[in-house]
Image (cartoon, rainbow, N blue to C red; front, side, top):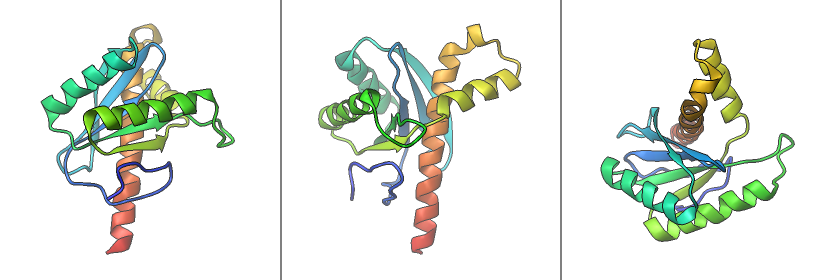
Length: 158
């Protein structure tokens, strides 16, 4: 089983809940899948206070939810290239994998925050009041994309 997958690659998911992580410089959005790994829902937003604090927060949510793996957003530029933010995400994913001893996947997060903000605007939410909600909805979109891609890959393998 792959414990680390690149954006766009599909490997069979271990059954169980997955946590989606939308990394940010100020806040980190979290989402959680259902026990079948089919549907993602927004979970929480945590203030980013450095990698040690983030890993502690993730450990807490993994324990509370029984999550079997994590999906970390990989910020790519619109042309698909990677910048310094992608390197930071890769480093964070490596630290999280080592410290939590769980499968960790990187997944392309392009446009997730923009889609989340647009969705919330269309639902009538004020952008000033929605910043924390945007982060967790972005994590939900990221995680749902990952789950959908793997469900489609699993279906093709049957």
